[in-house]
Length: 163
Image (cartoon, rainbow, N blue to C red; front, side, top):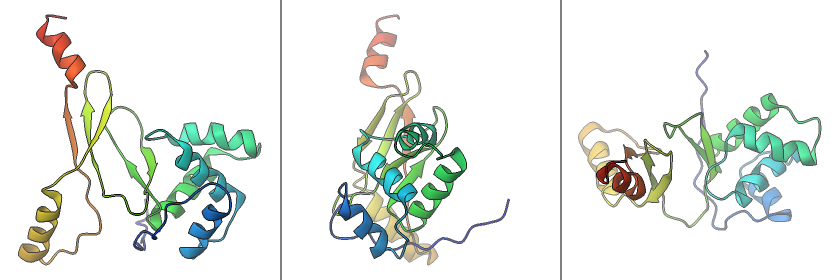
């Protein structure tokens, strides 16, 4: 599989909003405003948490019947290349996607290996880790993701109760 070179730009000052603001976000990242990009970005904006490509396809097909899964993946790749979204492999199924909202601090993920529940958390030591990697290895960190696997409180309680 060929390696894809990606460009990362810092997030803009305002988070995308449905309608014209989505188009502005695309233009700000030098992307053409297409119905496909607008539909996928709007679906992610309205999503509660993460969405799979298949979930985004269902939403997109309601608005644009000819939309196919290959178009969804191409659209997601172009949005991720300019840091409008990020993808994660949370360990319970395929990749999931989420909107990177400008002005929000990054978050990491706790993933329950029993029920698949995902909990966002702030990694206070991530900044220190980034600084250490840059200092010790000269490595310019463009992004980092921490996924911690374990049991959510409900599943842990059930296990402790003998369930």
